[in-house]
Length: 245
Image 1 (cartoon, rainbow, N blue to C red):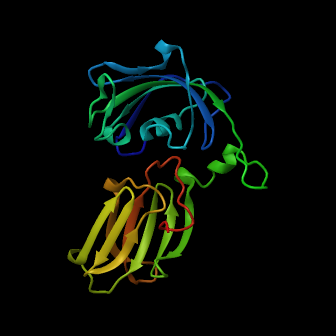
Image 2: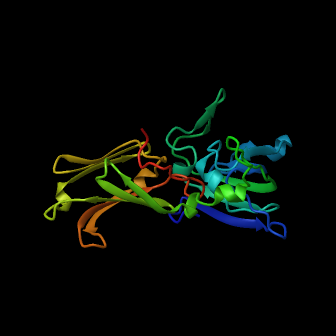
Image 3: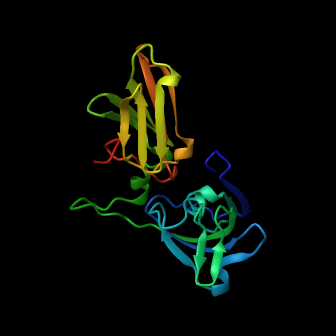
């Protein structure tokens, strides 16, 4: 789903026609069964006869769960295989009885999207916006100019799954001169000891997929291009500033 193999989807039952797809801000009612690689069930809403409701894109569920349901339509049932990076990660999940999901373990969810509840969102005195209106500009539709930042030293652009930052550098800057450190909630990039980018990014990052490159911009000026990959690529939207205050 994300293009990196971290979420694999197998369709079991197609959804209803006409299609009703959830978008950012919708409430989703689902049944799901979570299993480990050995087939052991660690969570089963069907067995409890208790459907689960959550808001899509609100980061209240696992990233892989959120991204998976975002691809479904009402009435659809599908199986999603999640890598640890988009599931329980290095922490795993445990209760009073011990480990439910050990650290660094891939998991599988059999999910049925029972219903999609369209919920408008009210901002101040403004009219209620539909989830479809909210979704425009989110996830992979988060495209367009971002503006200038870093005290005017860099420019950035929204490119869907990523934000592309351009920082002009000296013509003789080489790859060996670049220092960098990408984390989920931190960015650091320097050239020959001069800090070019540093701060808390506007969105959480899929930091292992972030990278940089040296190249010329459209005007021929040498730049360091930094590709910041958004975590939650189907639902996240970068705010107005590149870095949080």
